[in-house]
Image 1 (tube, rainbow, N blue to C red):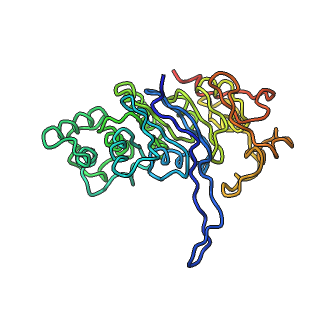
Image 2: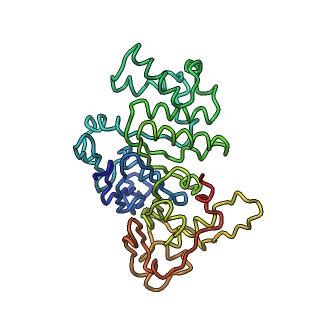
Image 3: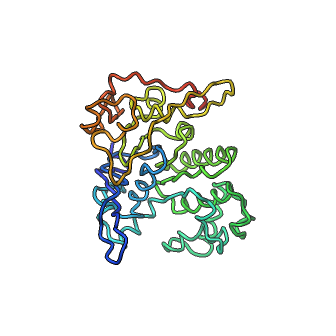
Length: 342
């Protein structure tokens, strides 16, 4: 079975210039460094890691919001394999209607001078998909699916709360009925109660419209609730990729173990014992030799400092970039959110 999306050795490097008139390039920031994965129709893949690891850069490179340095992004559409990285601007515009993005900040992602009706309708107008009566019907239909009141369509974004604004952003992203959505931390700026509403909405819409999500977040509890698979990213590379169940019940990478130890427990009597990583995150413009995590890993050996760990299949559909994945006995955290999923 062919995936909906296939990413092959994707790289996104940012040049670092020296201040001055000529701005000579002196270094390169490796925001995304040789990332590969497949994403199937109707599934959700969570992308987690600390701030600055390259999560958002990867999402933007997949959509060609920024041009990747190298690699391929292949979209399978109507039996055809479309290499998005090779398209010119006109061809890319036709592909974008199948791929959309929900942004992190619902306050800055909406035009304050446009009404909700115009914001949601803008993709239809820009792509010349509908006019007048048909346009109005499509906007109303999507607004209802996203939990918006029809009477609110004539209002401006400033009249809405953060959760309502995010619903507007979701309606705008889905109005063209895309197949693939990049959700860039869509609930991180919302109150906890509102987060649950938006997550439930996204799950309902996924079932109704058969959507495929790349869900970027730093909250593992969110990943446990909405995602089928999870990729853990560190300093531009994947260090572990697995199904949600496998990752939470049997982590194989020390960085994953550290992230999971910081998940808060819903039981106030539980005592948290987070694993505190020593040192600062290395500079992506000058990553350490060998395993990139060895400078903060308590299990690191001489081999880790000199030989880079490749992402290999530890067991079926469970990939790990660690020399000692088979030897380390890493445990799930006591506050595993999967225990409270249902």
